[in-house]
Amino acid sequence: MEDESSSKPKLFSLQDIQPSLLKRDYLDQSVMEAELKALWYTHWIYVCRENKIPKPGDYSIVDIGNQRIIVTRNNEGELRAFHNTCRHRGSELCSQSLGNFKGGRIVCPYHKWSYDLDGNLKTTPFLEQDKSANLGLYPVNNVAWGGNIYINLANKPATALGENADPSFTILDNWPLSTLQLAHSHRYELACNWKIFWENYLECYHCPGIHPELCKIVPLYKQNLATDKINPAANIPDAVAKGVESWTTDSKAVAPIFSGLSPEEITIGHTYLTLLPNQFIAAHSDYVRQVSIKPLKADTTEVTCEWLFSPKAMADPAFDPQRAIDFGNLILEQDAHVCEINQRGLSALPHKHGHLAPQEQDVINFHQWYRQLMIA
Image (cartoon, rainbow, N blue to C red; front, side):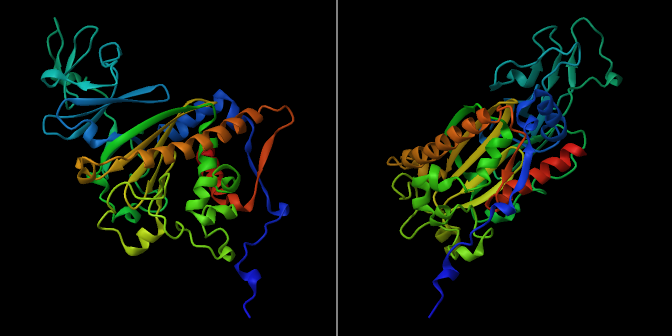
């Protein structure tokens, strides 16, 4: 007779807990300023979908900390990115978040110095041109992958895009990510530190008490586990429940299943890719959801959620993604609430640091990643 205890999750002990980051790491603005230099200005940051700026001269502005970056396309349609500052006296070049550079020129609104779409200085009113002056716009590293645009503010990025992805980019090879279109986006402003958002995402210890709807879709989450790798003894696959087609309010797909997926990928129902410090991608059988974050202040984080579908699905007159959107917003709103109460509680005078349970191993790994970069 099979021992029933072998199928039950292992009970962890309080003796296994580990210290979290310090209180000041979540509250002090000086820490955030250091994080911007050590993390946000040196890592690849998601900007937008490529089809947001499809034509030469189209541009989008992205803010990272106090840095404003122009992302555009040159006359050949190639991506270009520049710091949003004129080489004359540093004036901001663009104040609108989205637009098109008419006539293929980036013109400073102050003294009318102008640049072409490759950043080369072209005109300086009432001044004779000197081609040796080397006064083109300051370039920013940029790359596209899967229909997404990323930038890196480092002079020489330490890693290529995707080199530190968890897992590797290849896990999404069967999804037609580059051809998907944006059906809906939603922006949240959370009253919490950006690391609290990541900590919440990286564990499912909170799931049974906070996400009852999600636990019905993914039974493993009822066991306080985000992945079956943390506790294999649970003997529950990291997959959606029987009969579940997708992460929607009624568990039914809102679009045709992607044709290139393997039977296993369809059965699992969700495949994740994490790109610290700013983005994670959740690929489902019928749509892809992207979530990106940016710190605004030590206690404020911007979160943007995007729902991507195939052009064919979106062209169908009956297409209605609302059940997927509503489910995603429900989960994110539940997470937002606990992230914000977590942030408020950190201000308690006796609190020094938290304690991480074994179920939060991915949070422990995140803290190790963070500490190494901040020390460096």
